Image (cartoon, rainbow, N blue to C red; front, side, top):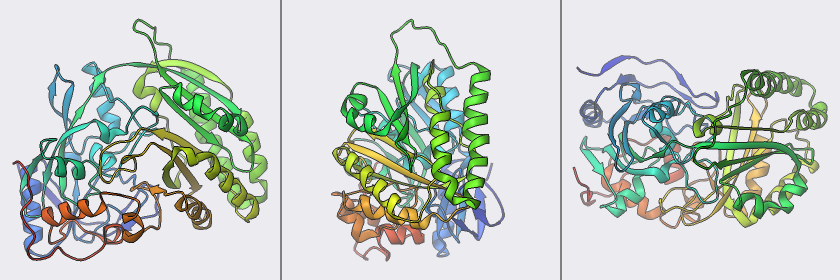
Amino acid sequence: MSSTTRTAERWTNWGRCASSTPSRVAHPRTADEVAEIVRTAADSGQRVKPVGAGHSFTSIAATDGVQLRMDGLAGIQHVDHETGYVTVGAGTSLHDLNPALHALGLALPNMGDVDPQTVSGATATGTHGTGARLQGITGAIVGLQLVTGDGSVVTVTPDDAALFGAARVGLGALGVVTAITLACVPSFLLHAREEPMRLTDVLGGLDALVDENDHFEFYWFPHTDRALVKRNNRVPEGTARKPLSKARFLFDDEIVSNGVFEIVNRVATRQRSWVPRLNEISGRALSAREYTDWSYEVFVSPRRVRFREMEYAIPRAALPEVLREIDTWIDASDETVSFPVEVRFAAPDDIWMSTGYDRANAYVAVHQYHQMDYRPYFEGVEAIVKEHQGRPHWGKLHTLDADALRARYPRFDDFLSVRDRLDPHRTFANAYLDRVLGGGHASANVSGATVSA
C-alpha cells in the first residue's frame, strides 16, 4: 500500500516556539515508501524533513518542503530474546514503546522524564535521562535503518565505526531514520525516594548523592535555597512493587505539579514581584514520598504546563560554580523565574554529536512559562554555561552556530564528512541545520558512503 499525502497545513511544535508550512505532508508506511519520497523530492530540488511529536523546542524539524509524518512506521518489528535486541519503527512513541517492551519482559536501560517523543526524534536530538553510570537512550542503539539523500536504504551497524559514530545522534542531517534496534534489559523495578532539601546541602554532598544512586536528579527553585531531590534505585530481585496510590498520584502529580503550577505561572505573568514568594511556597509544598514501581512508571512524569526550555551539558565538576553564577545573575537582574532549574547527570559515550561525547556531564535545564519572554533569562544563563564548555541539547533552545559548536565537539568535522557523503545536495537541510552545521552543499568530488545495504 502506498503512502498517503495531503494538503499541507501550518505545523507548530509543542512549545509553540517553532513553526513552518511544508509544501506537502506525506505519511509513509515502509522504508521503501520513504526512499521513493526522498528520490522524487530530490529530483525536483525539494527538501524533506521527518517530524515526530514536535517536542523539540528548536526548529530542527521545520521545513518548507516535504514533511514526513512517521506515525505509519511505528511498533515493534523484531525481538531477539537471547540478546534483548528489539527493532522498532522510527515513529514509535516512547509512551507506546515502554508498555510494549514491558509486555515482553524488557525495558529501556534509561529514560528521560517525559515520553510523547518518537524514538527516532528522541535519539536524533540526544535525549537523555539521569544516572552517572548510565548513558542516554542513544547509548542503547545497536543498529538503525536510514534512507540517505539519493534514496538508498542503508543499514547502520557498529561494523562501520564512522557511520555508527555519526548516525546515532544524526540531527536529521544524514537521512531519514526508518527503524532503530535497541539493546534492552529485563524489566526492572525502581525504588523512588523524593524529598525537599536545601540547595546548599545538595551541593555540599553532591558527589555522594550522584555516585551512590543509580539515578539522581534535583530541581532548584530560583530566588530560594530550596530544592527537590529525586533518588531512583534498582531493587533486589523479589522486592514487591508498591506504586503510589491513585489518590497520592492525583494530588501530587496532577493537582499540585500541574494544576496548581499552571495557576502559579499564570499569576507570575501578571504579578512578577510575587514569584520569589511563590517559589518559596512551591518549594515547601512538595512533601517527601517513597514508592516502588516499574522503571518507566518512575522515570516518566506528566508535564502539562506548557513552557520553553534550554538545556546545556557541562563538565560535572563545573556544576556548583555554574549554579552559583546563575543564582548571582538572577539576583542582579530584573528577571523572575517561576520554573525550577532541573539538574541531571550522565556517563560519557562515544557518539560523535552527543552532548556526552567523551565527557561525564551535569545537565542544567532552564525553563520559562510559554506566555513569558524566555530570551533575557536564557541569554543570561547561556552566557554562563558557554564559559564552561557547555554543549546545548539539540532539541532545546540555544544560539550557538557551527563555529562555536566545532570547538565543543572533537568529531564535528568528521560528522560533516559523513553528511557530505550521505546527503551531498542537502535534501535534509533546513535553517536550523544551516546554523549549527554550516550551510552549503558538499563539494562535487565527494566519495560514496561506506555503508552496508
